[in-house]
Length: 238
Image (cartoon, rainbow, N blue to C red):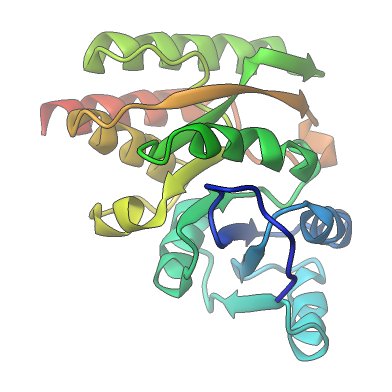
């Protein structure tokens, strides 16, 4: 495991979960950037039954690179399923979800960890694109995100600016004790809803974001908006 000098108060170990489904074009670059991030880290990759060569690459990597822990699904379970599979293997004090594309850059890690450096009582940090820098976000995705964020704030009395951000940092003991049910992208909204119902404060920091389109492999569709909204309502009323 890489040893990196850390600032006083920083997590001794940050566990990074990387769900992978058909990301052969980007997974090597993402892993290179994750490894280069200046934090002491545990890297957990979950292949969600990829069919584009990602699985074969990760099988070889599993044998060649002890710094990367790789778990494999025998059937596709979605991003949420991959996160649920990885959580029992988490050893770090905090856990961060890292998408396997290049929309989010691990260069942002120090900023995501910074609220923990200032106050160790912080349990959840969201990287807000709307407080930072956005490139190439489709207008439909922007509208859906803005609407879902507003709905979350209304339903739960929250004050966040970016519900659908792909960079979320959690205290591991907290996320591991929350019972999670969803398998798809909705798991992250389920988790946010359950944390807000517990009145867990969410701290936001600005991050950069470079969007990609469907042709480049983006899997979230504007139609996911309705499923996401239903998830928020369901766990508010449950």
